[in-house]
Length: 204
Image (tube, rainbow, N blue to C red; front, side, top):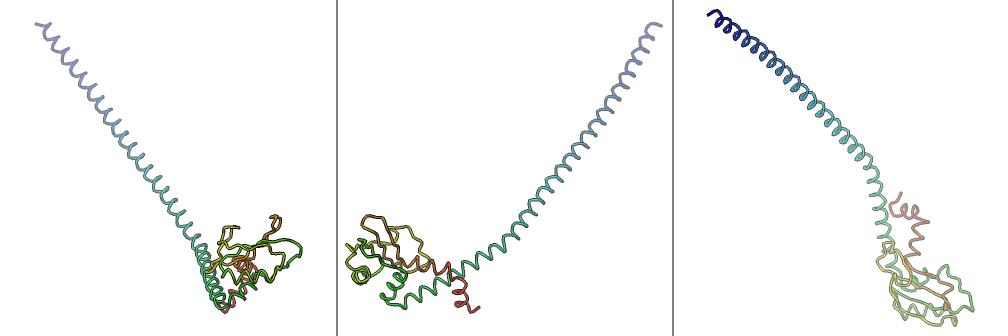
């Protein structure tokens, strides 16, 4: 009988100790869980702040670039506008001149060297009229004339011209070439007298 009571006491002690250890483990688990949750919350908050700072930096950089781009875009627009108006003015002026004046513009700085046999390519003009003018300037050194199109013989910019005209003179042996074209005449005019042309156009 005494032995049975001892066994009951031992069982109770074992159960008590087991509950105590279980409570301790449960408490530790709750504490660990709380720490993990707190750590996750902190990490989430840290990542959120880092992401927010990154987005703010991107936004600031974008705003800075946009502000920097405004003067540049304004300058580009002004240059484009001035060029457009200059081209309109030049086209209007050229349209008021007859074919003779156009040819005189092309040959203004041409100095013929006698004794060199030359071939002429003509485009943009009435061929017969232009050929007659070229024959008058070059004389017997002109071996032949040929009608061509803009850009075929030499690469050129249009310079905003509505009518592309030119006479390209070339030695028969290809050793010399003169590009007497309206796009080059006007291109040189823009390069050397842009400010004067703009002042005359806009009255400044």
